Length: 303
Image 1 (cartoon, rainbow, N blue to C red):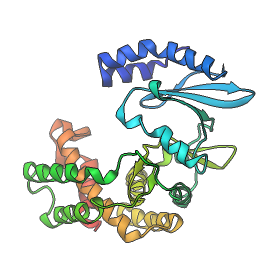
Image 2 (image 1 turned 45 degrees about the vertical axis):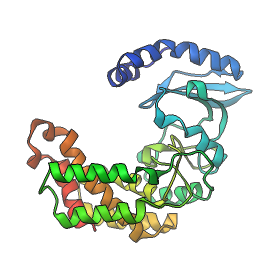
Image 3 (image 1 turned 135 degrees about the vertical axis):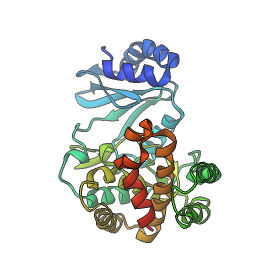
């Protein structure tokens, strides 16, 4: 039971002493769960950002044991899997909430990002996930409305002039009109190309849900945000417009509503880049950073 070095280093850097302490207990947690669920290890450990993936077999069936760091964002992942019951997502067979651990259907390592599948595949996948009523007890995305509004007010004051006032006003309008009241629908919360894997039972299955109650348009936002990195080498605005249309048609979503959600996210991202920085922003050279230029242009021209 060898913890991947890259995962251990990233966990320690991100979580500090709490991460180091958790890593020390991880082999014993995995060993105990393998015994509890009558599994046999079946390959080297893999990992994501916050958890390890241990290939196992049970009664000849290939499965994976996932154990995540004890982070609030991971609490409701098994609840989402339970509600979907394998419909568009990997099956959940066992859960050990005290360890943030699950025994899951094994999919292939190929993600939708690695394939030539188009955006309609993701939209179709999303339409299947959204067919499930939200179970009780999940966090509601609408409860973040006041937090987002306060952040936006602070950012607008601190970074005055970064975006036209009318653009920021539209973002406030999205919070008031769309974020504060949302439907009681189970949404993934982090749906993008890397969280959709090829599989045997179905061509593609979703993984790593946050398990939220909210507007289905929000999942379209997380997907389109990831797509900007793919599209930014060409006609970014035109590419996003075309892909959004294909996505919304496949997912049976109101394109105008999704566009408004995306506009809010673009404005929030423009300020986030200035507050926390990537690339040249961290060196104080905001004007030349391509990520900042890209987001600013989209935020201004998208609505």
